[in-house]
Length: 160
Image 1 (cartoon, rainbow, N blue to C red):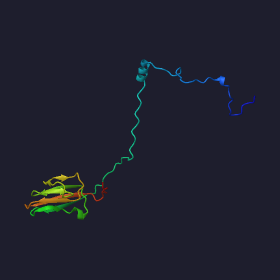
Image 2: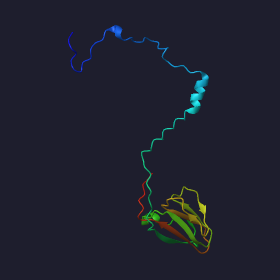
Image 3: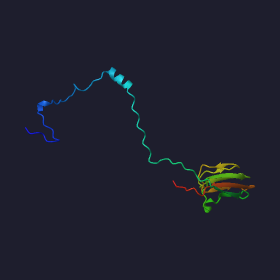
Image 4: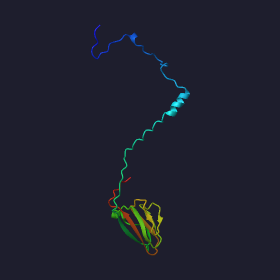
């Protein structure tokens, strides 16, 4: 018989090792319900895997506070129906509007004449909208109205 080569295993005769045949029932441990209950009571629960992170990472930003404002005066002695205050021709997109003075009753509508009119009173503020235009409606009464609009010229707006 020749010597086995290096890195080559010698072939053993089939009778040298016994290979188990299925089913391996004699090798599978079986648990009684008591043992299963004990194992589950001493085994810590599996930790939940962390939720996958979203594709966008939150970034803290701060708005530049270099805001500008302009007061618009409306003559309430003349009747108006959806009088355009004039933000669009000036290129103003306002963040807020405050009614500084309201000598007589009038209503205003924001952004489009199809929106609902809001009765105006002194000190009233609108801060929940991007304001592209203001429309004023009033009967011919006395006094004037002063509307202050505030905007940030450095703010870049991304349309929806």
